Length: 399
Length: 169
Image (cartoon, rainbow over all chains, first blue to last red; front, side, top):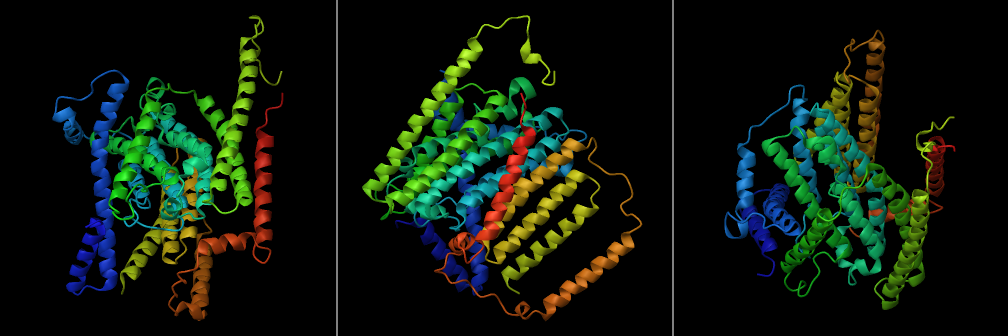
């Protein structure tokens, strides 16, 4: 009774086998059922996310949020969905119809694909593949494609500009993210997400706190949430790549964005907060789903907290921050972690944990020192009195 | 016919069809997107050959990097990303002859290769192919020389890019 999902799966398997179906066909049907179950579960959570998002942003902005429909406005997201479904479906003139309609599907489907490898519990997971971490990167790359397709096929300048910005940002921030994902892989000695969770007798956030922070920042950038929401900067390019989309097509982008945020929370939990690990999870595997979602929702809340607190940053700052700060820092972290790993021996001992933590603290301290000096120089340069008659800022570089 | 065979035939047909669309589509962006479909088909074939690492790398490198680069190049270089000229030039007959010869050659080679008729053996469940690949890439008995050479080549390309982009004061 402790593991209802596998109980039902085995029961179904026996029924199908009893009908005389071949083993291959039964495996195929079970895999298909699993896909449908995970997608349905995640999409139902997604509807709930609309409510969470609206309610939390209201609290951050000192409002009440939806509170008319149902207790605490819980029925509100259903009304939102109905509204999206009955809106007029517009395809702009000059749009590339097939690509235009395909783009929102790809945008949502790639987010759903990520859930294929996230372990929900010790015994409940979609697929335990030995290249799980790389799979996440690969699927993320396809997600970028959906945005380019939307921006290009809309036949709208703002949409195209938004798509260009998105790709510049997502591809840039993919580099520190992929680099930093090497650290949990290194600590767990495996690229399978299930093995990474199983290796976290000590949560990796203690072994690699800097890595977890870099992962969180690049995850927010990949999501395109504030302060990195340049791709849909309302004051500059109206709504970015989804400007021409209406009704449920826009709804798919919206659902994809919200679900992607929760997915990033679940990935953060899996890589750094021990995934499904928690008390009594070995005896009652179904508790793992509960723990994973608690951690994922906590991270979702952190990402919202950042979103509604920090204003949008400028595009050159966004790129500078990535290339001049996050990328070198993540390179340093990978090198230091691998060297410390060789010195400290097998993971799991107290010395290993303390050594890793100490290395992280020393690096954080050095980084802050360097940043402080850099900021001092910058402030002095900006604060220096400039003579108005020599606008050297606009001088041609060739003169 | 097993389920795996049916899926393989569908995937192979889709990849071939997409590959044909790459060269026959008039719109360059459509060509690039069809190329992505063809590459994704190859990635699924890798999955069927029990090479998940190659499959994922195929997606990361070809779909995630090269195709997006291609799409960008098309968007940035052409005002109208479509072609109105004739689809064939006068060399089409030689192209056809060459490709038929090549195709027959491949079919012959595969037909005479003994491995074509033996079913694939499942990999030993204990062995981690990913770990073995990683060790082979850095072991002196394996591919360490090729690996390091490729790394130096990429580093040189990186330094070259920085040198070109450097703003001289």
